Image (cartoon, rainbow, N blue to C red; front, side):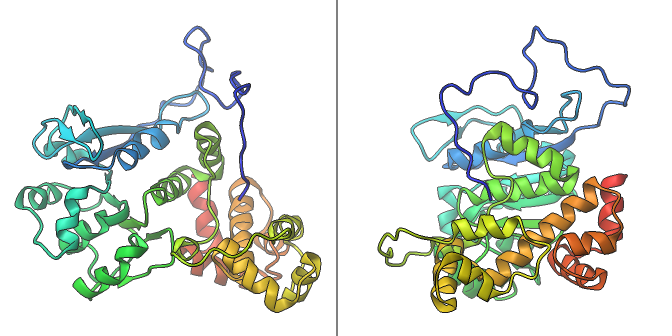
Length: 352
C-alpha cells in the first residue's frame, strides 16, 4: 500500500474535501441516501483511540453531493457517562436501547474486558445489551472485544482474530472458535473481528469498501490520511529480534511488481530485481510485509480485479488477463477464495 506523507502546507481544500460552510454543496438529482445506522457500544475503561474510529471513518464517507452515507451514534449500557482508559470521561446521548436500531454495531476494546480475557463470565448488563442487537445487524469487535463476542456465543463455529498476545488464550477458552492469529481482521459474514487497536481502521475501511466500493473507500482514506488497505497481517507485529538495518529492502521491487501485475512475475524475477537470492528475498520480504511474495502478489491481483470489476465494463476474461490471473477460471477461483463471491456477483453488487 502507498505510504502517504503530508506537511503543514497541506491545508487547502481539494476536490475530495467536504466544502466550507460558505460554499454550497453540489446539487444532485439523485434521491438522498438513507444513512446506514452504526452504533458504537462504549463500556467503562474504553480505549479512546478505538472508540473514535467509527465516528471518524464512517463520518468521512459521503456521496458525490457530500451527503452522509452513515449515521454514527455512541451509547453506553445505561446512558450514563463512560470513563475511558485515559484521564477523561465521555458523555453519551443514548443507552443500550439504541442498539435495536443498528445496522452495524462496533465494540471497541475496554480494559474492563481483561476480566473476560482472564476467564470471568460476561457481566449480565453487557450480555443483556448484546441481546438487543438485531439478528441481521453486523457486529464488529476491535482488539480484545473479540472475547466479548466469543463469550456471547456469537463466534461459535466461525473464524475470528484478536490481538496476537491473546489469540492463543482465546482458542483455549473458546475451542469452538476458529482462531486465526496472523491477520489484521476476519470477515465472517455477520460478525467481523479485528486484531490490535489500529486494525480497527483496517476492518472499518473494509466495511466501507464492501458497502460502497473502492472509490468511496479511497476517498475516506484520503480524507483521514490512512491507507485504504494495509498489507500483511499480525505476523509482522509479533515480538521478535529486530534485524540489522540494511541499505536495501523489497519496497522497490514491490513497486516494480505493482506496475507489472499482468505479467507472470515468478519468484526468480522478483529476487533478481531486488538483487538477492531467492532465499534471501523471500526471508526479507516476509519480514517486511508479513506475507510470502506469492501471497502478496495474489492479494494485489485480487484487489486490481475488484477495482476493474467496480469501475470498468471490461469482460471478465480481459480483467483476468490485466490482473495477472491469465484465465477467467483462475480469477473466479481466487476471487471466491478471497471474498466468497463470483466476479459477476461482485460486479452486480457495485452496479446496483
